[in-house]
Length: 257
Image 1 (cartoon, helix red, strand yellow):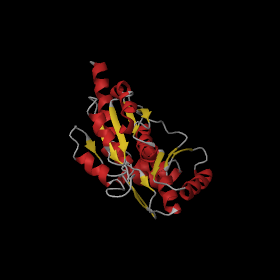
Image 2: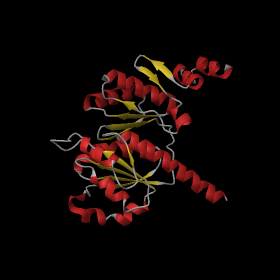
Image 3: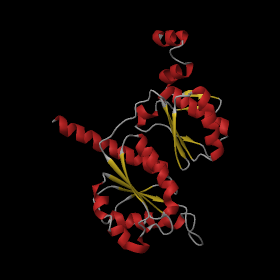
Image 4: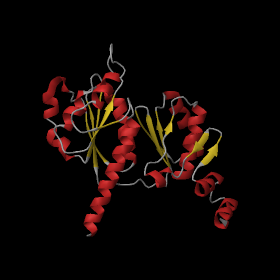
């Protein structure tokens, strides 16, 4: 405790960082940031930008950088990203901002990214599924997994799927995003011995549109797979990360023995 107080007093540790070490979370005007989630759960907290103002997103992202060295922001729009970029130029000028679609990752200059000896295959049925897959990809890449991205292999032309079976089998875990009737994850899960996490996507129209038909079909899948909620790329990425981390740990144990 005394060391923390002395570090705050001499300026080598910010009050937010000290609070994070003491409580595990930091309280600010934009809410509470769970700085200890990675140690507790294995997955760092992400900041959902949807429904938040640009200043709130900026405040939470800066708190994340200050206490954990990185910030992951999902469902961010252009206005929020522009506000974050402008603020970082003043508060964290040496930070690196990476954007993929609506998902943003910011790394402090001294942050050391983790590394996992595990490959996550991320698959889309069509181009419209890309943004959801992007979110999952950033989460897995942030955890240090190797990513193998396979796009646009929907079952409307089944040969596109069959052409990729060998590659799909090489992944340690697969995330498969599909809208419409959600057939692709079921088909792939019947072809590989790899864990498959299915992500129904809110594409399609008419009866069962907005991902409802895909979700219902995947929940009734006759092949063994796991299903997350509609458009839940972050959840799929987090689940795949936990599996990848377990595989990495098993490989470490195997090498040790």
